[in-house]
Image 1: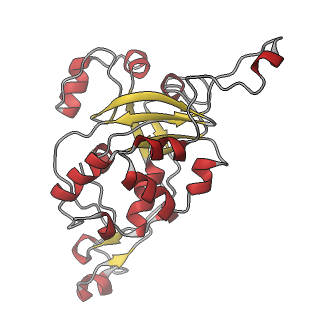
Image 2: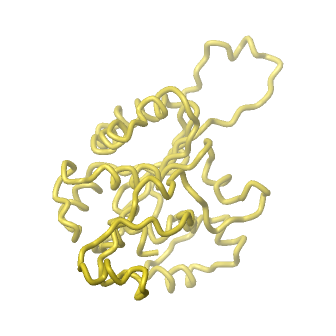
Length: 250
């Protein structure tokens, strides 16, 4: 759970495709945009006025067109206030957006992006319709290569030269998918997890109908945009920690 503390740093939203229904009155719907349907993800975030860092993140990672025109995603996003708190408290020395390396930006964006547009209720279910506690994201093992300190390398003859050199090395260890832990209402009831269980695991009290990613409460869910859905997640207070070459923190 500590591995994803950085994700908690941001206020997050979920954006995805809107639900549709068949109708015999198609002509009544033609050229009509529902009042509850926002524009694309990119324009929605731009229009908020409090997501300038996240917009830069999308641009820098080359996902502008994917969030404006093509693609269908569910996105957990973070507002500027969350980024500012991270810059003030993280232990990695990142004191401004300009300090963030490209690999770190990719981790922030893709770890909070899920393929296809899905409302929170649907995210609680697997492709087979079973309640799911964990969910993979768009993040790939090749998106960032961990940097491992010499003393943390395996104590074997294969790594002995690198340990003796005393320098960190880039190490692609395996292709294990990183997953988000979903404490959503349907997941809690489906997995028989109580509020006391949640508090015991996270150290955070939970109120009825709260939806959280790890210990981070989703502040605003199911923000529906064209082709996408959002959810806004709040950050819990805490400190960051270094994990290899990846630096997630609260």
